[in-house]
Image 1: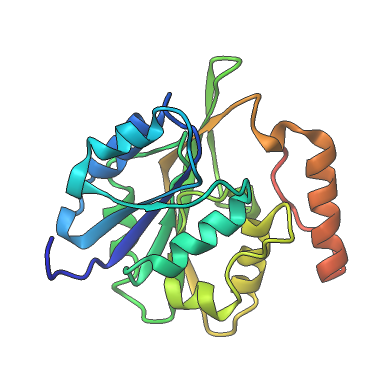
Image 2 (image 1 turned 90 degrees about the vertical axis):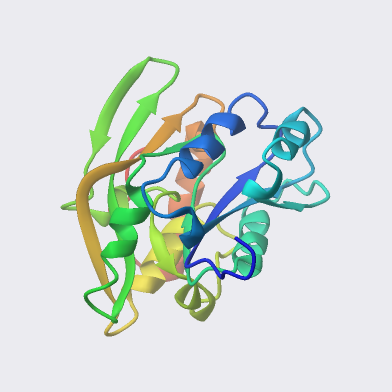
Length: 230
């Protein structure tokens, strides 16, 4: 991959993810899109478990940004976006998975219209505590989306000021700002191309924090949005 600038940057933010980071990275490596077309950028927020050793086993297959632990999840994400070399950004959370065709399907959607700003799709939601899986459709409501799995032009993320680190739901804030840009279009793919592993330890499992996050968005924009239930 030397001297080749990737079109897409897959950003994986991680902290003490030794239990599942291996599967996550492998799902990004096993894509139908040519490996020359994308980079995998792992931003490590100062892990203290075996995450670091696992990342080393991938050698030049991935790029690692090592940070001192801050616990500031969105700050870590923004640093990854800024360092990314690709024209397009897609987030893969460290406990989630890509379906093999997500990059190829999403990237191909950009070819027909220069005004397309981002591409999104349905996804599988696996509740690890209950052992259940369901498909979440975004056809009628784009706000059923989550942070991962959406392919976005990097220049647009920069244009709207990156992810707002003051908010609990910066991913929805970013989406709202993208939707407000005139002439920018989006493409919906009616396929489940991302696997969201829902865990009881996730911050979105805290109902009070979720409530606070929704309140922040309402105060910022003066209205409610049909954001998915957590």
